[in-house]
Length: 287
Image 1: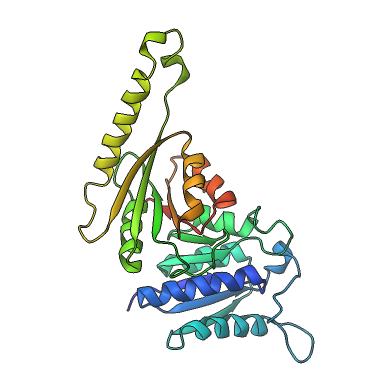
Image 2: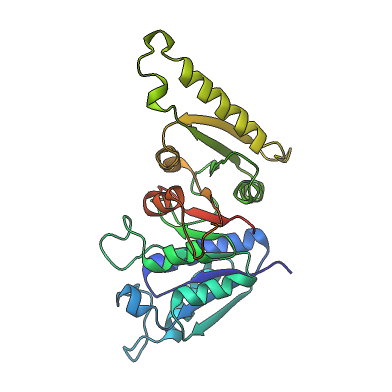
């Protein structure tokens, strides 16, 4: 049996949209879906609830929230194995712990303010920085479904060597039957062109060629059955990926494990988590 997929819910509509995406993904993986509600979530994210979450008594309980989330998942995939868990714990701790024995953890955006599409809540950021498994943050203006929706490709930001993020991207593209756009950003330092008018374009071309070579090396083990579109682009990596995310179904980035203690998200991952036009997956590199 494949490892379960975890989705965190807090009763908000964005968290239930995360359930929609997670149900699709679990069905694609032929895995079970585990829906987790941490009873201390409200103190982090506020009191607003989705319209479909309620009870006859007028008092909403953890059981009501989990029941609504499970019903939502089964509405899309009636045969999906679904379990629920009410955990009396801080949500980020609960989801990180659940992720130790999971294929991925799925969370929504903040969801309980008017800035839901612009700002990411502390829970999602913390889980993305600390989890041992890939973390999917459902954001952007798409239909919050892992399949369909008209997106014909997914996107991965490529470093200078084969990474766990790239391998994850291969598997996701294969599961969905879509193309993978692999992007390598490059920049030409200003000092290399200043004072050399006759060399205009030369240094830039060298950096672009180097980026293309590094991209090929990083994709050397690409499976034959995955359609990979290779692209280099000049500019900061986070800006390049944000622009490319607008018409992608999924954006995948890596999270390097730092040498210093404590969890850390790099600038690229942190920025795309806040501003991507599609769901984002942060994939940790192994120790």
